[in-house]
Image 1 (tube, helix red, strand yellow):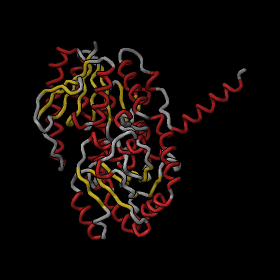
Image 2 (cartoon, helix red, strand yellow):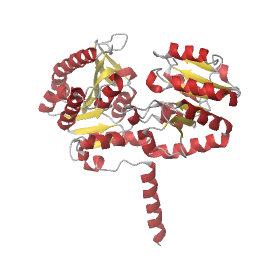
Image 3 (cartoon, helix red, strand yellow):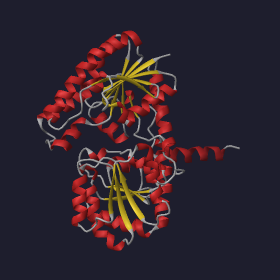
Image 4 (cartoon, helix red, strand yellow):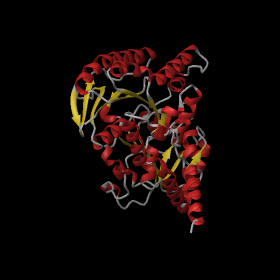
Length: 421
């Protein structure tokens, strides 16, 4: 039985993307180890759903650039020392290194010398991340350095994974070899999100019109813009409410803003909800709300929350971001201009007044999500892992289908079948 090691500078239990990959490998018959940060209970080693997790008690207290560098350096050194020790015992076929940081791939170089193939899963685009987070100029020396580190990192890897096609195209322009790259989207496991779920008892039978957000409450998600928009639109939306599920640094800001706008009884901050209860809450809403701000980094965002709403059959109102527009049309999602409360208010009223429109959007979104659903992404990832023993050209050179490409291929196939007796 082959062994795989996944490296991620995050708490494994809460890293949804890494957990999906690890558990897919276990279900396919691999032995899987993960090197990660210790969870709150401080466990140094434990097993979760068949995945063996080894941790370092480093914490994740990022804020300043100095703190980022310290945490990156400490985790890098721990991984650099830990991997060869495990490699001698486990003989890993593949080391799957997950960013950030990009240069974490170099901690796996000794494992390559011992026979492992290296995969770099680029969760973020680092230069744009720092431009967005710290307001650093795009032409600064620091961003130039980050682009250099990015390039030598993906050059070092045997294979590279990106999270969507717009990011892949961007990295190819920065020197990534397309033929060794593959897209594995941030899709969600359909098995965890179905419409056949039980509603929270206190909400059963409710006739409210509910717009809902669920996730971390930070400024990038534009929830303050959503509250401002609702303050403009609520007069035309009698009975409408906005429910915000989650916790984070923006919670008190949102509470104060709702109070100032006279919406304290209409904007409901539910707080953190257990992951297993999220489908029940989503089943109650009428519209999913994702008013993400747009900047050079966030324009490439593809949040996990979007497919969760889609799988649950909900219409989604979200910002018109480049990565989302690549996969979804105006017939599938209700787009609003990013950072524009007035336009967001207009779309809120539009969805409130038109129930058939909400149903059409939800149906079309499911159709357009079909080519990027998790079952297909999982198979793509497993084929990549299996292909590390030989050629993976069939995987990495296969077109990453959007709905428009898929429809074109399907139409061609039907035409060819129709012309044959």
